[in-house]
Image (cartoon, rainbow over all chains, first blue to last red; front, side, top):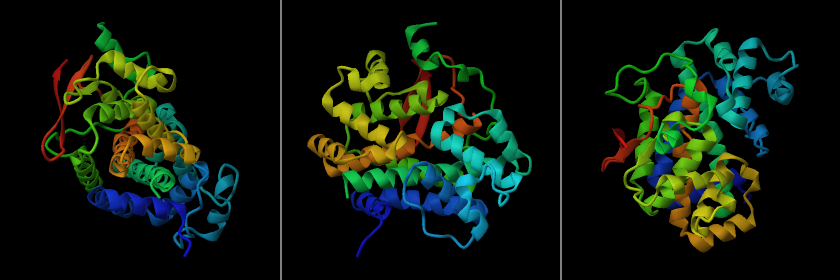
Amino acid sequence: MNMDPLTVGRDALRRRAPEVVEAFEHVEGVAADSVEPATLAMVRDRVAALLDLPAPAPDDALDGARAASIDSWHSSPAFDERDRAVLAFVEQFVFSVSSMGDAEVDALLVDRSPAQVHELANAVWAVDLGARVDHVAGVVLG
Amino acid sequence: MSAQADAAAGARGSDAVAPRIPLPTDRSQPKYGLPIDHAVARFAAAVVRRDALDPTITELVRLRCARVHDCRLCRSVRDVAATEVDEELAAKVDHHETSDLPERAKVALRLADAVILAPTTADARLREDARRHFSESEIAEILLDVVKWSQQKASVALRIEVAPREGLSELRFDGDGNASVGAAI
């Protein structure tokens, strides 16, 4: 049976630190519950692409038009301004969070409360760092 | 400003950046007291409770994450348990590959960089180096430390990671793994 590299990494971590991985997976579950399913699916797809990691399994929460054109979200008509605000935030978060500007956060705050933006930021962190550590753990511990 | 205050503040323009959402006000609960905040706090404590690694390696990895992510809070605290980490040593994490840090510390920081900078650079050489210097349990702890110390990316994005004071402060952990910021150093 072929397992994807991220699963190999997660399982390798789980064997060495089960209580920590359980706590992280609880975070992932709470984060997933705190944002819209389609938003979470966009975040997962975009984070994987930005990190040059394997694409996640297709998620029914994200319609085909957006799933197919997420790498060209800047220009694709499949995305509205609400989507673009999320994807711009994700790109800055993944590449250089210290260079995040007020504009990226203000765009999220147009139709989200500060608490919702805080929840979204934490969901992006869980997806971002989860993908990163699973990949590296797969290489060094798998 | 003292050398220690210099180290805490750095030379970054971010020190004057205002919070992008209102700061938390109830210090009796994690951040805003939302379910995600409680879940993250539980995860963070679980990471800290692991003790396979020596405090020096843990602190160097924490500082590397702090500096790469430009977390003003993390840059301004020093773990009191890491008694061997002075400011001269702390500064070396910025250019660890060309520093005179011990190879064991460099490998730990290489693992951290693989996670926070470019996961796809992790390769057989990194695997070999990591396994030469650390047990599997220690490697897992380093990697999960990086996830924990990168949690502040969410706060940095919103610029709610405010340093407690100008200069450096003590960072302490209780037996349950919960962090608190103490006195000025």
